[in-house]
Amino acid sequence: MTWIKPSFLWMMYRSNWARRAGQERVLAVRITRRGWERALSLAVPTTAPAEEVARAPVHVQWDPERSLRGAALNHYSIQVGVGRGLIREFAEEWTVELTDVTPRVRRIAELLRAGRASKVPRHLPPERPYPVPRESARRLGVDG
Image (tube, rainbow, N blue to C red; front, side):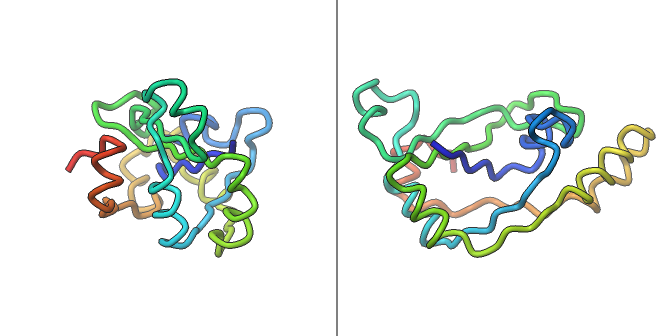
C-alpha cells in the first residue's frame, strides 16, 4: 500500500520537517481529480469490519491534524492508502506532477527553530476543503 497524505503539516509532523531518517526529501505529488475521486469511491475506512478492509483496494484513515509544532489538533486529516492493485494506475495515470518541496520545508523549519513562527504562514502551501462526492463522504465519515 502507498499512502496519499494531503495535509502538509501532518507530513511535516511525520517526517520531523524532513529530518527523520529516510524522509529527508519531501515531494508534493499532484494527481488528477478523476484519480482522487476514483480512490475515494473504492475506499473503505480502516475502522470497517476486518473482512471489508481486507478486500478493499483503497483504505482511508483519519489522523489528528497537526499544528506547526506537531501538536495534535481537534480535527482530522484524511490518509488514503492505495493498494497494490492500483499503484500502477496511481503512478501512471493519476499522477501529473512531482515537485521537490524540500527547500521550502527547510526554510519553514529554520523559521520555526529561529522563533519566527509568525513568518511561517506565507510559506505554507495553500490547502482548501475538498468537495467530496456525497456517497463517498457518507461511506468514509467525511464531515460537512
